[in-house]
Image (cartoon, rainbow, N blue to C red; front, side, top):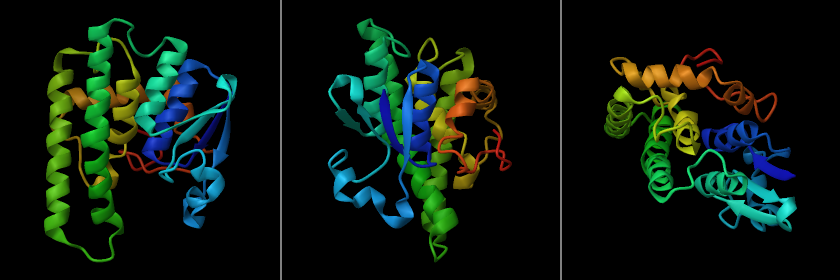
Length: 215
């Protein structure tokens, strides 16, 4: 059994989607970030960085794992699925996972903050992050031109990137002119496990690219 500590964010959805894809039993613990529950001592014991998501693997002696990319790798290695076993295949998946962790996630996150939430509209900051998001989305579009998935077969790299890309409207960026990326986004949105995963936690919704609760 996996204990999942999460909230309705792209990083949280990465893990609920992976758990759904892998068919692993898990219990959801909703972290109310508005109440700073992620900073409470009992949660800091699981994730010293005070961020979601985090898991505790009860089958592995209550082993905690934090950082969404690390959790995805852990779950893939635990089950032998969603990541190849051979060195080159594994490396390719991890490269595209790190592309999300180091690029797509941080840049879309900053674009989202300055575009939607920051009390003062600082246009140079908005332009900077939206331009970089669009560049990164272009990298994905080019890479997907002759590929169904990012790294061979469907993998944790697809889950990680899709969880963020699907929310592109929240960053004020469209997928216009990116046909291969658009195809991939729609393709993953049709997967039942992706649909179930983005519905976790129940009753909380994250804005999507379509702006209507669906991708």
